Image (tube, rainbow, N blue to C red):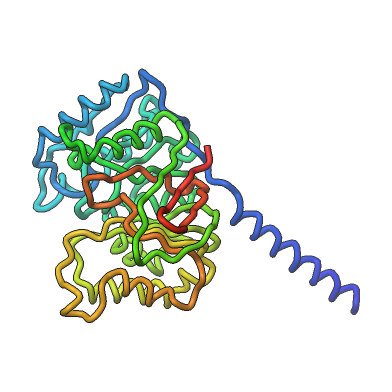
Length: 329
């Protein structure tokens, strides 16, 4: 009887250690881009009305020595979408399967990525990983791909690229460094709302509404032992509160190692209507936990949208006059 109990105990310990090892395993890094590599621009969500924006993106890639391929349905329109679900799916599937394509750059966000997510076949992609780049609605792809154990890039898209913007220079520099495998490190000015501390872990997350909407689905993000990044645009304060409380109730913050808050732009209500600022709402949601919190990180629906390599281990230091985010090479 004692032998059976001991055997069960050993089995339990083995499973526990295996789970811990799995959670600490680094994600796969798709190969860094080299000059001459091909990047495919696709529109998996909202309508691409701005052909000039796409041209600007093409010019930027060519300036960096990269080749460009466009999705056949890139400029299609179907109500608010860049073509029907089938058309957007076809372009994204082609980008995943084409061995000549080394990175997939989403033209814009909007809404629609989640409508094609379950119909995508990632078999060839998992055999031959490549970078998926974008933000906002593209968070749906980030979450799905991280579950497969592969890194992605949260950054500027062609329709958010502004060629003549001095304010966007650092964001472009960060995108180029990430593309070509250079180390990425940021120093950001302090916020009065920051909660100090130092921590390490994989950074995951993206748009708050998308992270919230995927709760309970097979694409729900895993924040256990990780640093969570969140950004948002155009939401009322009460909805930010609702989403943060929902993440808390889902256990997102229980074993989270840190929280980075990016742009929270174009809010629809002010503090006088709700009683708290968005910073106070977020701090209230995580007040039971002691991990560091960094506000005003330059990423999200803002001009200075710095690139984050989601799934990559970072060191986060929130102290005194600055926040430092340093990515592993």
